[in-house]
Image 1 (cartoon, helix red, strand yellow):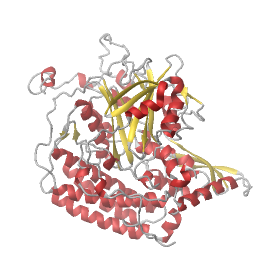
Image 2: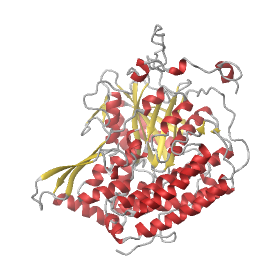
Image 3: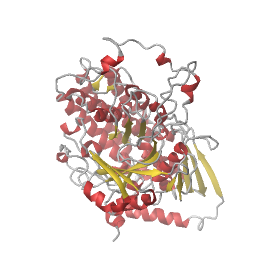
Image 4: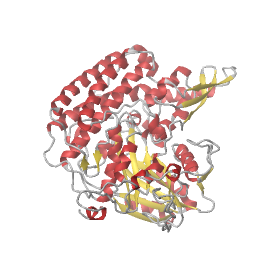
Length: 394
Length: 226
């Protein structure tokens, strides 16, 4: 029995065989003339401007290839001419729906090179803001998911409830979308008065939102028919392509960077659960995200109760020079593993920053996942892979 | 289709929260094992929280295959390159009316050493033990090329395309080295250090003109404060 066979569940294996069969049937059963379909660059399923060129045979995709680069901003080059504190305002804009989460791994990498650790209080607040950006990010995904299948209602719920979270982020950081709040050695400011109580109330609302989405979308028969067994990505393919986050966990890999590595963050101070799903189909990916949003609200609730007292900044020099060295830090961002490989030469700015963004890898599986599917499934598969264009193009 | 709820009891793949990582052990536990498996293909290694390996250029693909098949590094994280030559343009903060300052352009490599100007590096992970390694390889200065990894790790396909356009490193055996981001007729390789950042070249960086004095004295003083 091969490794693949042992690791796949029955449902996964059947869907995999079906897609392989569909693949080989192409051009034999259907004597239709080939046609090229352009999806995007402007398309509601693309979260930005992504163009997908699909070669069709009848209703089936023979080959599909995403065409990136419409939003390439060259952050790796720009980071080389900036100082360490300036880089956060750049990387903020990579995944614009969960901006604060982008800053954290970069700051952690710089801190690792400097041998500085943020005080316990700011580690806690960082983790809370990190989870809030995850909730803001994924709640929009959950709403948007419906729109791409013709369900209009969930998106109104999502925009309404996401706004509560964005207000919290704005209240604490001053920025609704681009907080730029993380500093080497801590945070810019402490939390404002009354923020903790308000956050608790919002987390309650967000749990209600998750229940509503669960009823409205995940319990919906049409939704299930369009998502179950569609776009199956088996475990070994997911690993080979470097899928991460909910996409990987939906293929049955029990791996969450919040739990499985030790970082100076406060995730291990809360009681929460990593959700996985054995199926690896579109439904599983969305379902795992829904559960994660629930877990995030729990993490935030628990951490709010246990914020330690103390300073918000460690003692760092006013002019930050990072000692020579190389560091790799990645965190479990809303979209998956986001990491920075920072090379320092002991100067004011980094010598080289490699940004490993989650969507780039998550999207690279698209040519594989889209082969042999039907045209309407392209949209649901792309939606369930969940990418943000700024995160692909950087 | 009936809804099949997966609650905590019947989802065998989800983990209990008690298993949360509270250990402070380093991520690498089997550095010796990795080094032994690569044998003479390994040129140099460096171990500090993460494990850096440098392999021979001609053994790049076979080393990665060993890492994947023998040591279980199934998860492909990323692949990219570094140009170790310091930028001849500095940080792009020169005043164009002044003569260009002389800069040190000696090539110094990072962890695990290096003999060439450019190095390709990749990170792979073992999804079971959560151990990751960073593998570096030298590429020839005059004709930078390397074996493609796309049939070892399928995810390397896009990363190699990106590295190709940004650094001008070709990957032999790659099925499709089209540009990922840049137009096909773009000249130059933007992430090489000798490629100027044009926005900084045409206009002096305003930051150098109006530097605000820091509280408590000059820059050097405050840098020594810690």
